[in-house]
Image 1: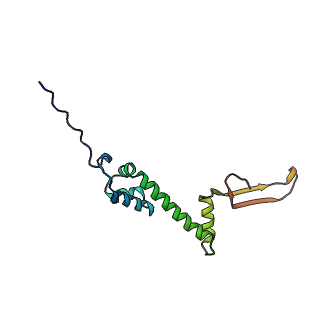
Image 2 (image 1 turned 30 degrees about the horizontal axis):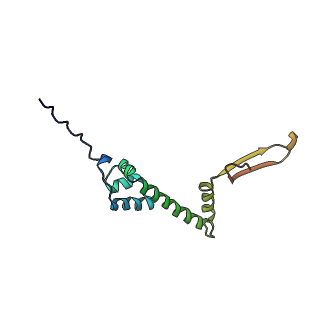
Length: 134
């Protein structure tokens, strides 16, 4: 007596293993990532689950996101080094995010040497490198 053939496993409709990337879908994912579209929205636009996008399009997501970040950084740097009214805010944002600077709020009260009286030193909202003290 012969054994019955094993049933093939059924895969879910949105199973990432069912998706086959094409040059057209790779280009679409790269373009959306390069323009800053979020992973959830890329998946929705492609009609697949975000796990499918993450699994099959790692390179396109990585390259596209890097390109988008470089464009934003270049634009922000151009504004920060310019003379527009937004230059100061862009410069502070640039230093906080790219140079990893931080705002420091430091208050010292008292005299040098432990004596009575002395100077009040207040640093508030200064930008400083994260590894240096003011």
